[in-house]
Image (tube, rainbow, N blue to C red; front, top):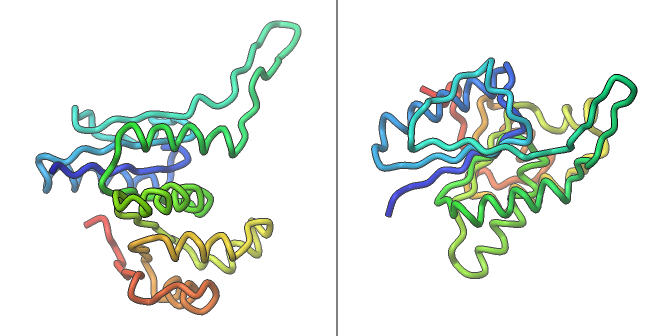
Length: 192
């Protein structure tokens, strides 16, 4: 059976995580000659980060809202909601049926966890991998206090593996989100 990795992320604008996604794609293409990769994005900004132009890599992006612009007015026809994005993402996942799903943002992790949980009932769930790049408890308090720790805890319970790049992130997940230590893999520079 061929391996198929789905990477779900917000956009491919400039940044460290975007560069990491590009490196992961290149590494998988080089080491797994039969693997396929599907990248699912909310926004498609590919002019800053180069993703391999390979027939085994597909990039799809959420259509989002449509805007009509004229000289006299600008009107948004369709407003993005989390439900609309989730339904689009679930459709994409059911279409490609990946063997592995890699998620980089906690909101997306929470949405993917429901998909994986449903498929676990039928014993056809993909391996669910989460990347947690920052000390999450601090980030949530300072940047996004609406995002409750119970959602993170739920996502981590469903996940098979959680990749962290620092011991402080691992300790934070264990102590503040009750993440099982055996699920956490510490890889300081995990794209090499």
